[in-house]
View 1 (cartoon, rainbow, N blue to C red):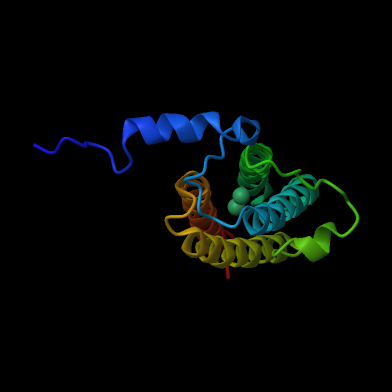
View 2: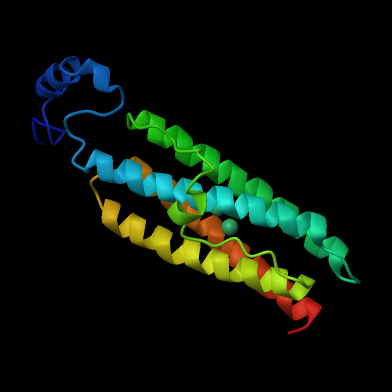
Length: 179
Ligand SMILES: [Fe+2]
Ligand SMILES: [Fe+2]
């Protein structure tokens, strides 16, 4: 049995925690580049806000025979994306950053686009494209974070899993509404 059950002994951990108390949840063991993580998270935040806006637009504009079920799905996705935006904003604050909610430049910061779409089918396709963009960029963020910031990585992994479900939902809607 090792005398030292932790990678860093408790005395050192306690001493470290007392130094730089103003950094809150960010301890000396945090090895990620905090500015970059905040910047990347602000891009993810912009992506989520754009997705909320697009899904809301689609929810209110959905019409046609298949509209009711599809509209309900759009609304559910809008609610999920709002939840993601909140989680990401919260984490940015924990990291000592400031969440960027400025409408100016929102589309430039966002990875996903805001496309209105004419028909119900267009809307579903555009949402699917946006989800696929989010999936790819979030996977990149997760890889970038690696083991340097496991909390942010875990959050992004959970969000990624939901975006994959969204993409799957949209695929099913496409097959129901034709093409
Ligand atoms: Fe999302
Ligand atoms: Fe999504």
